[in-house]
Amino acid sequence: MSNLTQTLPRPLAPGKFQDPRVTAKGERRATVALAGLETLWFNTGTLCNITCRACYIESSPRNDALVYLTAAEVAAYLDEADGLREVGFTGGEPFMNPDMLPMLADVLARPGDLRALVLTNAMRPMTRRAAGLLALRDRFGPDRLVLRVSLDHHTAAHHDFERGEGSFVLAMEGLRWLAREGFRINVAGRASFGGEDEAAMRAGFARLFSEFAIPLDAADPVALMLFPEMDATVDVPEITEACWGILGKHPDQMMCASSRMVVKRRGAARPAVVACTLLPYDPQFELGATLAEAARPVALNHPHCAKFCVLGGAACSR
Image 1 (cartoon, rainbow, N blue to C red):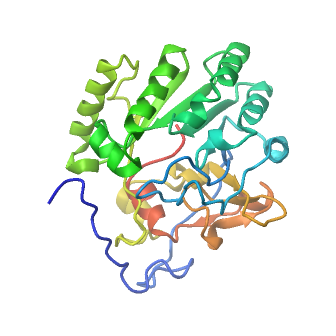
Image 2 (cartoon, rainbow, N blue to C red):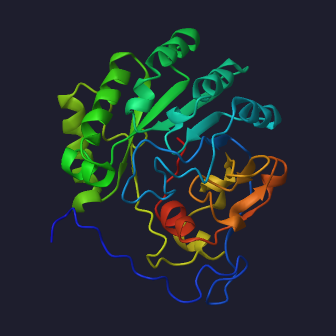
């Protein structure tokens, strides 16, 4: 069977991830308290210029389940936040949002060393904003704005299988432009995609970066982030309170201990705050309309909590 053939999903074991208080075995489910809000994410909208085969948020040119946030809405949350070190923008494709550049300017103009991170496919929605991005670089310098480019694999065949024919070439054009213009960049790929282990993936990306003069160290887990697969139908263990000691981990290491995400649902009067970037649709992870309301603990009651964060050790921030 070809490495490009998708794996058929397996159903979850009965009873798992049903009760936010206890697991299917009746054990107390792990929760994570907000230790301090360091990273505030904004989902700029689910509209995207491409449709991927396995997009966890189902972004596409037609999906506006999460509508565009406005610069005024983003500013209101930034005014409420205290002690942030980073503001992240994700989508959809963030550069499709007409207020993307004003939102970035607002973040970068605020006092202190607040950083801005944009997750982008680096294709035409971004390159159409080239003049505006260069103006931001010239106004604020290159250090506090990071563009994280999505490259599922280091070869065109695997990347295009996921994102559509020709998408690899366009993404590489955008990545090379960012590198030439001196922007801070990193890359997000998929761990084990194409049947390769992490070492092979990093070696492949190292060759790609060298070939195209991309100044990134593929061995650096921040410069090249390899994220575990996110399939909510695959059976994974539930995380209990006892797991922290068993796994040698601490709740403060989880994304929801230091971050929240703002979304705006189609038809809603105002935005809402959800627990993390991975779970924008599940109502149990919607925590309130304000950051203060969203400061409550989060029960790890979803497969993504287990596979991506606790067991996978991944985080969307740096």
